[in-house]
Length: 263
Image (spheres, rainbow, N blue to C red):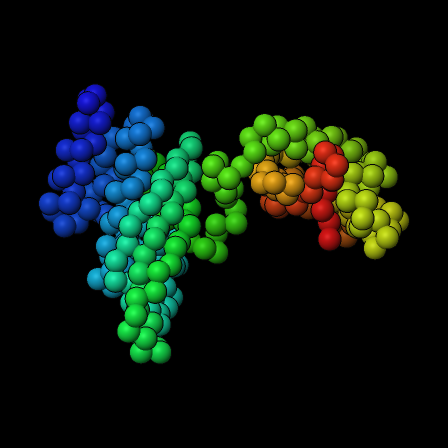
């Protein structure tokens, strides 16, 4: 056991013994080794689900990112309190981490309170977590779409292919070459998406820069999180400065070639 892992285990023991783990876990060391990082996340997940089992919703919200905690707490506790189920038990079955993102699979059993159903029901929860300032925080369902799926599900070599294809589309978009970009959308959509209409819509902005957040490929489906810095071409807004717009582009692979899925 190396010094980092020893510090981690000592930290976990102290946290569990105090009964206020969710508030003190931020003191744990950053830059942990990958295995220790996974155990760190596993500990955080376990603490959150322990709070759910005892229905301590106030403590559960300690696992949301601090700057978002107040907003979610305002409505979340009331929502949790009206849940039609009670969690009986849980098991953290899988934990994957990569950089500042984590993916967790939790198996759990519940009883259905609303229907007075006495037999426990087995369920699963696929969760995403994010590391901020050295600590792991739960990503609520409404935000999870902004993060890619687990590396275990993705085709990393094909993601490099899609990234290159996206860069080709960006080259066309930056130069306002809408006919060229049109050829990169799913050919099956051409009957419904007319070039002139497509070009008119795209020409509402002049694209200046782009930042790729991530590229994801699962099977023949791809997604690219991208932030475009763009300027409106409408004369009524000509004095407004360029602004950022973040979107998740959908892509589809057809016979080995990636196309923008605009429908």
